[in-house]
Image (tube, rainbow over all chains, first blue to last red; front, side):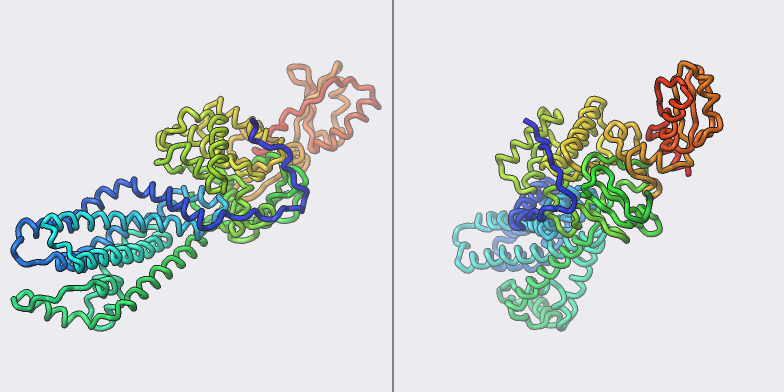
Length: 288
Length: 319
C-alpha cells in the first residue's frame, strides 16, 4: 500500500476551488470531546474537587451538630446557593478551568495542530469553551449531588415538591453562572498572556466590591444577577441575628430586579464574551 | 534573486506558494525582511542558521502569523482566512509541543478526524503512518513518554497523513536517529517526486543537500538567494568557483589557461589535477570546450570542487 499518491501536479494558475472546511458543529463536538478528556485529567481538578466538598461539609455539619435548630433543607439550599456557590465556588471553578481553556494551548504551542486543520477558529473556541463549561458544571453539580445525599439522609420527609423545585432550580442557576463565568474567563485567557491575576481581581475584587455597593451599581456584577435568581425563604426576624440580617439586606440590597432581566443579562454577557473571545482568537498568532 | 521583485519559481513552474515583499517584526526585532519568493512543486529547502527567520517565514506562509507587511498565498489564497485549504496543506512545526496526555494513536486519529475523515479511513491512515514511521508498537503509549525522535515522527505523521499537496516541514529531522533520518529523507524525496510541494527548513546543510538541490537561502530575515545550487552559483559571478580538470598533460593545460577570460587562478595540485579558480562558472564552462578543441588540449574529467551548499552558504552569509 502506498500512501503517497502520484501526480499531484496542478497546472499553473488552475487552482481548484477551496475544499470545504469541516462543518462547524462536527468540529465543535470533536474538539469539545477531546478537550473535555484533557481538562478532566488535569491535576488541578483534584484540588478543585476538594474545595467543592465545602458545601457538603456545611450540610453535614448542620445535620450532625444542629439537627434541632429548625434550619429547613430549603433554607440550607438557598443559603448554599446564595452564599457559597454563587459568591465563591462558581467563580473559582470557572476561573481555574476557564482561563486555561484557550490561552494555555496558545502559550504551549499545541494550538498549531488545530490551526492547521480545515476548521474555523470560532469552532476551536466554541469547542474548547464548551468543554471548560461542561467540566466546571459537572464538578459543581457533583458537589450539589453530594449535598442532596447528605440532606435526604435525614429522612424521606424532606423530599417535598418545594425542596425538589428549589434543588433543580439551584442546578440551573449553577449551570447558568458557570457557563457565563467560564465564557468570560476563557476570553480573558485568550486576551491576557498571564490571565490568572486579572481573573482573580475580577472574580473576587470587582464582583465583591460592586455587589455590595447599594443602588443600581450592584447590577454591574454577575453575582447580583445570579443571587437574584435564588428563591430565598423568608428571613426569621424573631431573633437578633435575623433582624440584623434583614436590616443589612434592606440597607445594602436594592429591590430585586425581575428574574427574566437577570437571565437576559447573564445570557448577554455570556454571548458577548464568547463573540469577543472568538474575535480575539482570530487575531491570535502562534509564538512557539 | 533576493528581496523584492518578481522571482522565478523555485521547483517546477507551478507556483503553489508565493510571498510578495513579506516582512515580520516583533517589536524592534525584524524576523523576516521583505522576502519575495515563489515555490512550485518538488522539494525546496529553506536553509539558514538558527534565528535566521525560517520558522517565522514558515508560520507566515502557513497562515499562523500575520505578516507585518506584504502578502503570502498558498494555492493563491490566504490560509488564515480560507481554512478549507488546510485539507491540502500539511504543517510540521519546529516546536516540540504535543498534547502529552494523548497516545500516539489517539493524537493521529484526532488530527485525521478533524480533517473530516470517517472512522474507517481514519483507522486505515493511522495504521499506515504508524507503520511507516515504525511507531506501531508505541501507538498505545502517551506522547509524554515518547523520545524526541518519536515525537518528531509523530509530528511528521500528522502533517502527512491526510495526503496534502503542500507540506511545510520545519526542522523535521531534529532529534531523529540516523535510521529514522534516512527514512524521513527518503520520504521527503518521494513526496517531491510524486509532485508535492515540500518546503523543508533546516540549519544543517548536509540535511538539505540530501533532500533537494532546490534551495532558498535565508539569513537575518532576508532571502539571500533561491534556485538550484548551481543556478545560485551562476548568479554570483564575483564569487570564485573552483574547478578541477583531469588531464594527461596538466602542465600544458595549466599554462594555456593562465590569463584566459573568467580564469582568476590556476595551479596543479598534488594529485596532478589542474585546479582553476573562475570568477564566472557558467562563462568558463561555455568557453572551455572550444579552448580544448581548438588547441588540442587533453581533458578527461571536469569536477566542481566547491559547488556544495556549504560553500555557497558561507559565501552568501559572509557577504
